[in-house]
Image (tube, rainbow, N blue to C red; front, side, top):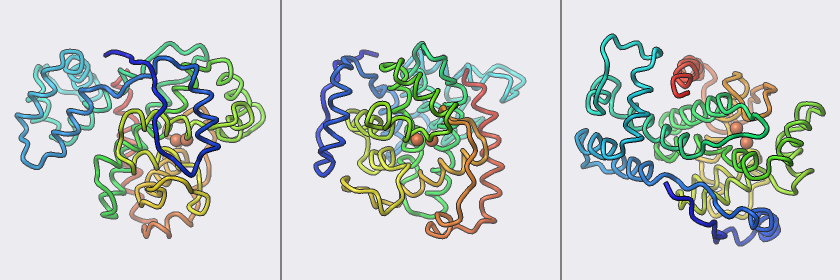
Length: 301
Ligand SMILES: [Fe+2]
Ligand SMILES: [Fe+2]
């Protein structure tokens, strides 16, 4: 996968100040990671109502690295299949179409965003948090019938990717940010604003825009730490998917399902539950499923 020179994305008219800060910071980054083309193809086949299991298996199988990584995960001890699974088609038959689509997308993204961390940033915890948030976002979007499941999954998976960019391209600053979180109890955003004048959410928006993600996913990445009344500037800031990803993030942090550099477990506030129209009892099944997902992610490494 090539790593083209980063070009400043356009958009976000009403956020000129933020945009200028992020642009100034990102001007020094010459090679942003790209969204893997295979992940885009997997998404588009998944969205096509006329596509078949054979179509999806063919798309995944064309990418040898993705196929090898996918089969490594499927054949890991976690899934416990007695005999070896040797094809994508077989994996779909055993695990189900939707599971394999999510897994293929996730494997491709994790692989593309891999790098050596000077801060020894805990990527296992990061991806556990990201994958759990993705699954929670998708489940909530389906339950509330408020957003396309794939958009919710993508937004949840990538909501904190700005932190990977900070760790990879601004390791000294990010190391100080992690220390501020650890030693002074600051939130990620407080520490990032204090040290860099911007946040992982704004950096994430920048990258998401360069990846041409759906606008609602971009808004989710940008606003996942802001209450509804403080969101402004993006056309989709009021999209329900933003609330879904925000709540999914809170839920996963409250449950201690991985973390993205700030392992403190917040209490789950009641207001978002009511605003989303969620019955607290309906969360128990989701919590159980997320604990399984957290165990599953260990197979990815
Ligand atoms: Fe975040
Ligand atoms: Fe998060």
